[in-house]
Image 1 (cartoon, helix red, strand yellow):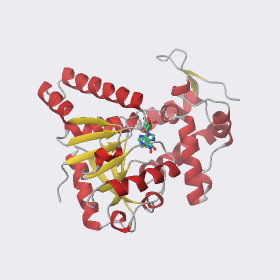
Image 2 (spheres, helix red, strand yellow):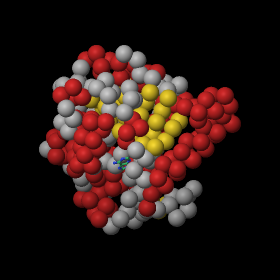
Image 3 (tube, rainbow, N blue to C red):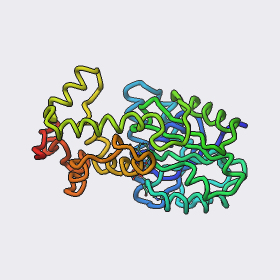
Image 4 (spheres, rainbow, N blue to C red):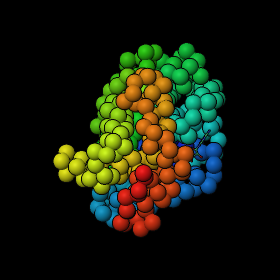
Length: 296
Ligand code: NAI
């Protein structure tokens, strides 16, 4: 089995990065979107990113041009019919993803492997929207933002994934230039399983007066060598996204360490979503000089 043609569904933040990475690695890549504006925006972003890499000398101008030549776009799922693997990166909503997989199962050839880039939804729950043959070929392929730069991919196996196909997808991840880690279909996989309780603990420490936003961030940055502190990170990921992940993880594990602290719940209710909304744990009125918020 050899993957030659890669399909990507969704051309937002993650889908555009995945498509760029696959095309740069030498795969014919076709991206399907439901929203034409998002598709154009995603492709403009890919072009800009590849140009930046070429200017910096990370890739040659020939590699950039070849990657752009391998990228194709469509608004029609039928364009994915003969792909060897389809990577889905659409909105994080189980019902919408299941509906998509049901349609896609009828469109794609029997051999096509389905891979979801979901951060928190159970791969098994999406997989059951497809037939028995596809269920053997259904995996998770969890990339990190920004995809062209972040080295890690989590390759996720369900209890029905064919072990040979799983190994093949793992090899494909390496062909994309990534370091792969293999994991099983448990909400949060490896990274979020460990990272989310850490972010939530930082919020609880803030609530208990253990330290200020700035001091807790500095403590973890300078004391542990983390590239950013937990509050800067939560604002970057999105306060609302973090909250959503706690809902899914708490639902699966029923453990307090995955439950949303009161402050996080209130921040979401108040619309303090982090960088994207201009305010979260920090105020980004001056984006180069964020100021800690007074949240009490
Ligand atoms: P996004 O909102 O930037 O992009 C999603 C895109 O999917 C939108 O452009 C939307 O028009 C399109 N879309 C929605 N329904 C569609 C359909 N039925 N058919 C085709 N296109 C459709 O979202 P983002 O951040 O790229 O996330 C996508 C997936 O990746 C989610 O499952 C998310 O959990 C996961 N993820 C996100 C990460 C992040 O840091 N944002 C990190 C790792 C995974």
